Image (cartoon, rainbow, N blue to C red; front, side, top):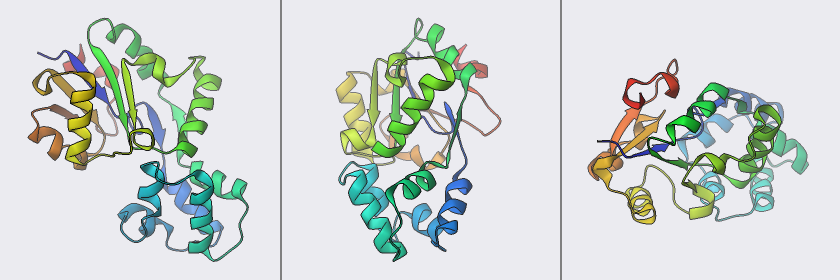
Length: 204
């Protein structure tokens, strides 16, 4: 029986296009940005900003060092945020009645720069006051200093919420985030690109 639902954010409630950020950084002279960002191994800068271990200013300084170019913060911010598209308004609307049937949670790998941007666009696009207003708890990687797919992240989430793994469904658009969650007994659903949460039978 599902009592709790943990949602990912990007690709589930917000549309993303990573290629927009890749192209934006290429325009700034960063030829291999996709490799640096996608692999998360070429440079630790991206893990650090996502886990809240460095400030946005330190992140921009790190990007300038990688680029070896003195690019203004505003241009770097624009390129970094380019991947963030529009909200899935019907999916957000669906969370309101769903919260009467289940306890809802949000677990997202994100960062302060993106958070500030998508929080502002939420109010502008949808009229909803905040992302947090939909959920019993939200866990953002830059605030909890933990990130998916690490097992300790899911252990923290279960303990912090006081919920049982076998009563919890985790919905994410990346299968790489599931192995550790499944190991703990959390039920999972991979949200495919054409799927929307409001149409999932498991939530009806």
